[in-house]
Image (cartoon, rainbow over all chains, first blue to last red; front, top):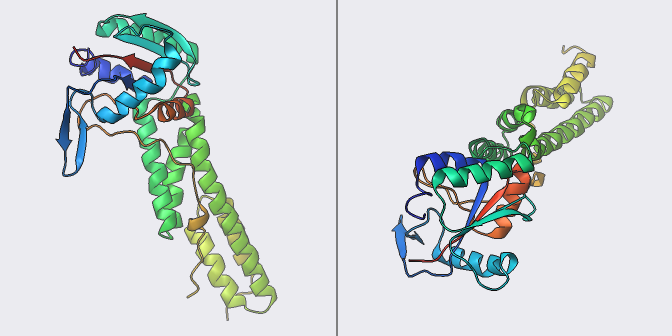
Length: 221
Length: 55
């Protein structure tokens, strides 16, 4: 199955609907060099032999009492509770069908490609926020929150929304500071700060607040 | 010009599980059970656990 089912393009496409973990206590199949300093398992994509041997050590006790039959496929809910299993090699179609049944039991989920896209956007927003680019951070995180109609996306959307909420909170604090400046007589300082919030935080409530406060300031001479 | 003391440092969004990124059309495998469950919970999807031995 390592060389027939898992690399099969139909299986690769279907596997984006769930999470997969590989357990094998043996590593005689060897590693391959990837790039300058990475060594990955020669037969399973993207992981090391150390990882799949550790997975075996951790999970064989969880899922087997006594003899471990290889190969065995076990499908679990997101909390790791077993839904079903099949001992012995399975054809691509059979395994996809079994995982389809597990998908139905678990409910609407988020596809792997969408998940990767959303995580990229969240990271992009995080980077922008660290580089003092609120406009870019808002654009990246809003791209994620726009996917809220997908019921499987709610947890990832919540992470992006948390970023937007913190930005908004900060923007509102700045608007309050600007009001204090105006009250203290520094109207131009207040105007400058409010304009920064208005232009940099568009799409958030704090930008609307800033716009209102700009309108309340005395006109510049 | 006043420079906003940005809140970036305070923005610590929960990190996503860092799975291996395949170069081509390959399966993605979780590095660990902890990562597998973290991603499965976040996506609300099942987990396929594959047990194998070398031939």
